[in-house]
Structure formats: C-alpha cells, structure tokens
Amino acid sequence: MTARILDGKATALAVRETVAARVARLVEAGVQPGLTVVLVGEDPASQVYVRNKDRAATQAGFDVHTVRLPASTSQTDLIAEVERLNADESVHGILVQLPLPAGLDADAVVRALDPRKDVDGLHPENVAALVMGTQGLVPCTPAGCIEILDRHGIELEGRHVVVVGRSMLVGKPLAQLALARNATVTICHSRTRDLAGICRQADVLIAAVGRAELVKGDWVREGATVLDVGINRGADGKLVGDVEFEAAMQRAGAITPVPGGIGPMTIAMLLSNTATAAARLGGVPESAEEAAVRR
Ligand code: NDP
Image (cartoon, rainbow, N blue to C red; front, top):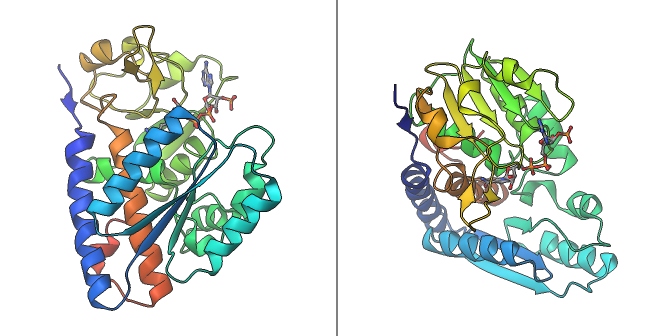
C-alpha cells in the first residue's frame, strides 16, 4: 500500500479562503478583525514564522501589526505591552511568539493575556475550556490536526489515537480534542515503555516530539493515518518530520508530509481563531458553516 498524502498546503488554503469570507462578513458588520504579533528578540526561526503569519493574515483581510521588542526587554515592560494590547479595541487576537529570550517568563506573559484575545489558546482559562468542553480558543497546531482529518473525511470516533508527545502546545491539547471526538487516546512521552508496540496499535498515529524520524516506518500499522507534527532540521539543512516518511508511506493509509503538512494548517487555524475572537468580541453572530472551522 502507498499512503494517500494529506496535503496541508492545499487544505490550509481552503481553510484560509473560508476565513477570508468570515473576515469580509465581519467587516460588513462593522468589525475590522485585528491581529497583533509580539516578537521579542532576534530568533531566526521566529522571524520566519512571524513573517509567514503576517503575510497569511494580511491576505485574509486582517489588520495585522507586529510589535518588535529587543531581547533585552524586561518582564515588566513585556507585560505592560500585553496589557496595552488587551485594552486596545482594534486588536482581537494577540500572539506572543514563543520561545521568549532567556530570562523572560513565558507562563506569566501568557497569563497576562486577555483570554478572549489569546489566539494561541494557551491561557489557563482556554486550557480549562478545552478540558471542560466549554467555549474558548483552541491551540492552533492541535486544531490544525483535527481540521485536516475532518477535511479528508477521517473519523476519530471509536478509533485508537496514539499521540507521541505531551507538551502543553501540542500533545496534551491534541489528546483532549481527540477525546472530545470520542476516540480512545493513548499519550506517549520520553518515559513510555515499548513506544514501538504502542504506536503499532494506533488507527491514527500523531507524532509531536521534535526528534527527526524517531517514529519508524514499521511502527505504523497497515492502513493507519499518520500525522507528523515535528519540524526538525536534518544534517543536510532540509526539514524533516518526526516520522520516517518514505518507510511509513509504504504502510500508512494516509500521511502528512513535512514540510507542507501540519505547518500550514497551524497558520490557517491561527487565522480562524482570530476571526472567532473578533466575532465574539465584536458581538457578531456567526453561522453554523463558519462555526465548522472552530472548536
Ligand atoms: P516539546 O519539546 O515541548 O515536547 C516534546 C515531547 O516529546 C515531550 O512530551 C517529550 O516527552 C516527548 N519526547 C521527547 N523524546 C521522546 C522520545 N524519545 N520518545 C517519546 N517521546 C519523547 O515539543 P513541542 O510539543 O512544542 O513540539 C514537538 C514538535 O512539533 C517539534 O518538532 C516542534 O518543532 C513541532 N511543532 C510544529 C508545529 C507546526 O506548526 N507544525 C507547531 C508546534 C510545534 P517528556 O514530556 O517526557 O519530556
């Protein structure tokens, strides 16, 4: 068997078109959705991510601003900036690009965000909403994983989802989302025994580890769906995922590539979250069709 490729680029484009239509309707209703990205320091990868987010958000019709602060910014000044954005009615989404330079407390900065504008879904109120199944904003990468499955008709109900990785950014929220879809979920991490054996039981195997090709092709059950969240730079400078792609292709039923898989979906879901935040803050009701790209 050769796996069907789940094309994140094309799927993200479709999501972004839906979001652009939502933005246009919000503007008609008198709300110009605004996104502000806060970038502290000069981390090269963060610069690239921020540029991509800025471009995608501008194309979708958002009013986008990037606040660039030096790496020497103090915790107090960074929190003051977040509070300024919380109070600014033209800003509906605030994204503080992580990681922050050494010496800054990311947790405290996230807690300072107005949870209604926390389009990364990391504020404790949004984490609680996810666990409790109440209204909130969901972290973009996990939301992108669910969205790409939905848009390819891959069901989770009753299936065994194995998530490798338990970060607050990806693994844990993803496991919650799969659980909310009535999947049976196993979460693996660095202390898991017999990782290979557990992966082989997965109907849907999701790797979010950050170790190049940790998940071997023969860990993939015949016909399983594989989502590869990992972004690692190989010795040759090329991007590789957490899954041995070529070998996994021979066994999986469907698989996301790296690059061009979950990465573009993450940006699309950021835009979707920002449109959701703008609609809620602006008091503009959205249709059921629009609600389909938010959870
Ligand atoms: P973290 O480093 O925060 O978490 C990694 C997780 O992997 C941890 O839970 C860790 O376990 C687990 N782990 C590490 N080594 C092993 C191992 N040998 N076996 C099993 N589990 C292991 O990473 P993130 O969740 O933030 O990111 C994961 C990957 O996804 C990275 O490559 C990152 O670049 C990428 N990423 C991609 C995004 C996208 O848009 N596509 C967005 C966000 C992240 P333990 O908890 O025990 O330490």
